[in-house]
Image (cartoon, rainbow, N blue to C red):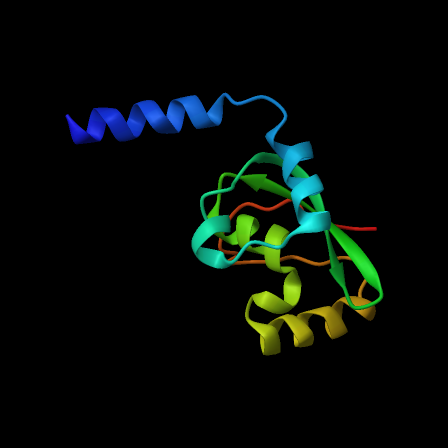
Length: 108
């Protein structure tokens, strides 16, 4: 019974319209803490600042992309992301082999 209730709630949440624009608005006025934002996921594109440029990502209901949306790139593996961003500055093409999820990385 509990599993069916959880699945029903997830289905209802998944079908809430305009979550993505609403979360962008929330992010401008209030940055929730991780215990709350981990439940505030959406499907769709967003951009993340990396140094002085941006990358475009696609969230597929993943914990990683949700964290990157709310915390930014510095909130995730700070040292390896710094190294990655420095290498990106010297590259025109990047293959993220062994990536955690299937993100759509596009340098803007």
